[in-house]
Image (cartoon, rainbow, N blue to C red; front, top):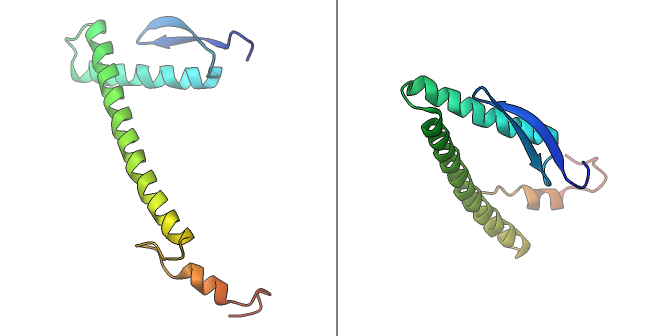
Amino acid sequence: MDEAGARSKVRIFGETYVIRSAQADEEHIRRVAEAVDARMRELAGRYPGLNVTRLAVLAALNLADELLRLREQHRVLMTAFERRLAAIEGGGEAPGLSGAASEDRARPASGDGP
C-alpha cells in the first residue's frame, strides 16, 4: 500500500466505484463492497419496488444494525472474559470453569504420570 492508501475499483449493485482507503488493503475493500452488494441484492429481491437510493439506505440500516448488535455481543463477551480472568488471577475459580487448572498443577512435570 502506498502513502495514499489502497485504491480499488468495485461494482456495487451494477455501478462501478473507485474506493480509496488509507487503512484497508484492496482485498478488504473488495470484501466490504461484496457485502454491501449482496445486502442490496437480497433486499431488492424482497422489495422489488424500491429504488436504488432506498435500497442503499435500507442496506446501510441493516448493516449498521448488525454492527451494533455484534458490538454489544462483543462487549458482553469481553466483560464475562475479564471477570473470569480476574477470578483466575485472583486465585479463585471463575464460575463455569472446570478444575482443570488445579488438576494440571497436581500432575508430574515429566508427563509420565496418569
